[in-house]
Amino acid sequence: MGALLKKIDDQDPDTGTDMYTPTIWALNLLNSNRDCGCLRAIILMTDGRSDDHADTLRQTVQKLGHDTVPIYSITFGDADASQLQSAC
Image (cartoon, helix red, strand yellow):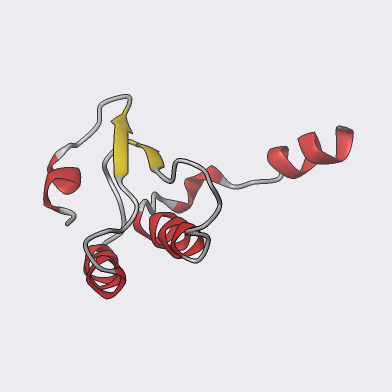
């Protein structure tokens, strides 16, 4: 447990927000595990301010098709919902 806490403490949170890259990663992971027998969904907790990789997310969703995994977003703090509304 101590090693995990040290790893967390060593993180530098001043690098900005990127909600798109982890969402793309999760979409690809869940899409490749369609037969897992589980409810496939992504819960995105965000402040709504992200570096701009929205086009890559759009391309990924188009590539995977319309039956892809649903993405639910939960905003917190002084969130900017405008990016979330225009993401896909």
